[in-house]
Length: 226
Image (cartoon, rainbow, N blue to C red; front, side, top):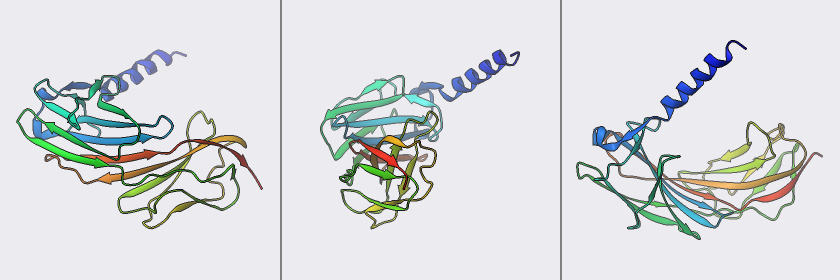
C-alpha cells in the first residue's frame, strides 16, 4: 500500500509529459509534422476531416496553430478540439475526397487532397465460427496498393478488441483462422470492417501523413464453436 501514492504520481507525470502541448509559433515551422485524416463512420453516416500537428514527428508534442497560421478543409474552417488536440470538420453523409490547405507562419503553403479510395461493408452473415478456418469476404472492391483492411470483432473484452488484418493486393476477403478469436466468450459479438488507404501527401522536411479511413456499419452476430 505504501507504493500507491508514489506510483500514482509517477503515472501522472508520464501522462503529463505525453500530453504536453504548445503553440506552433514556438517551434521552427519546418519542424511541424502533420497528420491528415478523412474518416467515414457508417454507423453515424458522417464524414470527419481531421488534422493534427506535432513537433518533429508522430509522437512529438501536440501543437495548436498560431492565430496567424491558417487551415481550411474544402475552404471551411475546422474547429479545434482541445481534448484530442486535433482540428475537425464534420459533414453528414459520405464524402470520398477532401482538400486540406495549411499555411504556416513562414507562409509556406501545403495543399493536400485526401481520399477514401474504396468503401467496404459486411456480407449477409449471422454466425461467426471461433474454432474453424473460415473465409470471410467483404462487399466492396479488392485491396489495392497502399490499402489495409481490418475485421474488428467486439465481444466485450475489457482490455482489448480483437481484429484481423490483410493488405494483400487483389484480395477481397480474409480468413478467420483457428484460435484467432480464442479470447472471446461465445455468444453475441459486434463486427465491422475498417478500410485504410495511405494517401501521398505534401509536407515539409519532417514529413506528413494522410489516411482515408472507411468504417462500415456494425452487425450483431453469434460467435459459436463447431
